[in-house]
Length: 136
Image (cartoon, rainbow, N blue to C red):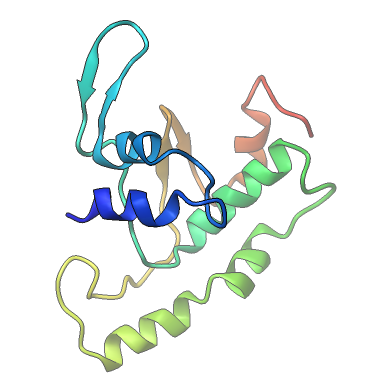
């Protein structure tokens, strides 16, 4: 894994403008919990390079939740216009990729559990409204 190197690459001002140590703790999963303990959670954060439409919908729900998007949102249309999953699927097939990220998924929408809360991309407004704290 090259997570320590990634921490150094993305820490400068022109990217995240954060200390390397902070980013390394997030990416590597070894960090102080603020209660005097050191946690080791190597799978704390995960990466998936595929442009999942469901993740685009989730990002939009958060933008709406925090007031960056106002009014009605056609989540599906925006997700499919921005996240070009069909193009990615086609390229993956043309390149005959194999392995964990090599086989293109047939369905680009999936449910997630994020911070203990289930997200169903077919019900984005229900998800936004399920939060007690929001700025919509």
